[in-house]
Length: 346
Image (cartoon, rainbow, N blue to C red; front, side, top):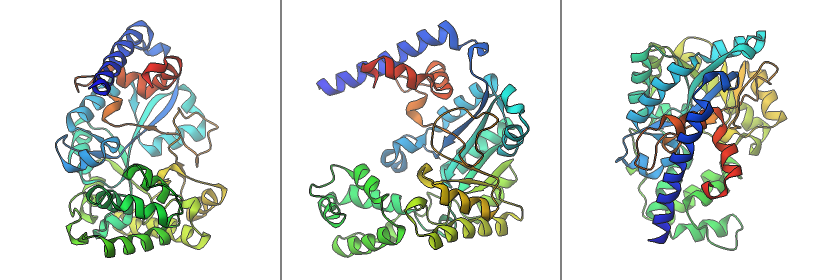
C-alpha cells in the first residue's frame, strides 16, 4: 500500500511540476531550442490489450497518440525523414523547429491506429520495418517475453545458461542479458527452452505485426518505409558477415516490395559501432537513427541521428489523461534535466 501511495504521489508531483514549468516558460515557443527532433514510437494499442500489458514502455494508446499529433502540429513543423536529411545536409536545420515521427519494428497497431491518425491530419512519418515480421515471424524479444511471463521458472535456467549465478528477477532483465549475445546464440537458447517448457510456438500472436500488404498501404498514406534489419539482432554483437546480411537483405526486401529506394535505417536497440556504421553506409543508406535522446542540428553525423523515445508515460498525468505540459517537457528534453534536479521524481 505504501508503495502504491508513493507511486501515486510521484505521478501527481510530476503533473504539478510539469504544469508549473510549462506555464512559466516552455509554453512560449520562442524559449525552445531550434533544430530537428526525431520521435521514436513503437506500438499504438488499446490499454486493455495483451500487447499493452506486456510491453507498456513500447505502447501509446490511440487517443494519446492523436492528442500528441494535434499538439505537435500546433507547435512544430512536422516533416519527413527525407526533408530532415535535406535540412541537416544544407544547414537550414539550424533555423528549424521541426519534428519527425518514426516507428520501429512494424507493429500492426501503429499501422492500424497511427497511420490512420497521421493520414487524417496529412502528416508524414517513417516506419522502420524488421523484415522477418513480413513473413509472419514474431521478433525474438517478443517471443522470449511471452515465454518468460508464462513460465517464470525459466528465469533461473536461462540465467545459468548465460553464466549468471543468480536467477533473473524478471523478463526485462533476462531480455537485456540476451541482447548481449549473438542472434544465433539467442535462437539456440530458444530452441532449448521450448523443449523444456510446454510452450506452443503456434500460439504466438499472428496479428501483432504488419505484412507486405500493410507496407504497400502505408506507402499510399505518406509513410516512408525504412529498414530495421531482418531479425532485430544487436548489430555490434554480430560477426561481420551476419551484420552485412542483416543490413543488406532488409534493404533488398523492402525495395522489392515498395518499388522505391529505401534510404533510412534504424539500429535495433540503438546500438551501433564504427563497423556497423560502415556497413550501413556501404549498403546505400543515407541516414541511420539511434536511441540517444536529443535535438539534431546541421553538422550532426547522419548515421548517428538522435531520437526521443515516446510512449504512454511520456504524455499522461496521474489520472491517465493526456497532459500537454508533460508531453512538451518530454519532447523538448526538459524533463530529463528536471528529474536530475528534483530527485524524488526519478
